[in-house]
Amino acid sequence: MITRIVKMHFTPDSVDEFLNVLHEHLEKIRGFPGCLGVEVLQDINNPQIIMTYSHWVTPDDLEAYRHSELFKLVWTKTKILFLKKAEAWSLRSIH
Image 1 (cartoon, helix red, strand yellow):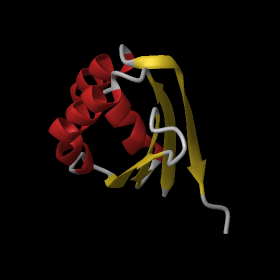
Image 2 (cartoon, rainbow, N blue to C red):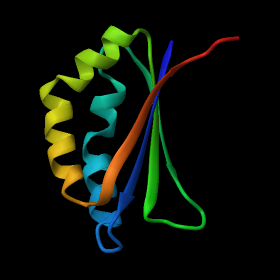
Image 3 (spheres, rainbow, N blue to C red):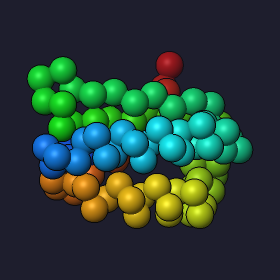
C-alpha cells in the first residue's frame, strides 16, 4: 500500500473555494481504481493549511490517478488557490 500526503497552503479567501472543488470531486477520487481512501485534514491552528492523505494499492495506481483527466481537472482548479507551492510525499509502510 502507498500513502500519498499532500500539504497545501491556501490564501485566506480561497479555503472555502477549495473545499467546494473538493466536495464536488471527492467521491470520484475515492472511487478511482486502486484508491483505498482519501482523508482531508485541516490544521487546527491555521485553517489555511489543508492536507490530503490518500491510500493506494500500488504506486502504479497512484501514478494512473496523477495522469488522469480527473486529477488534471481538480489540480487545475486547486493550484491557482495556493499561497505557496504544495508539498507532497509518497510513502510506504515499513513495519
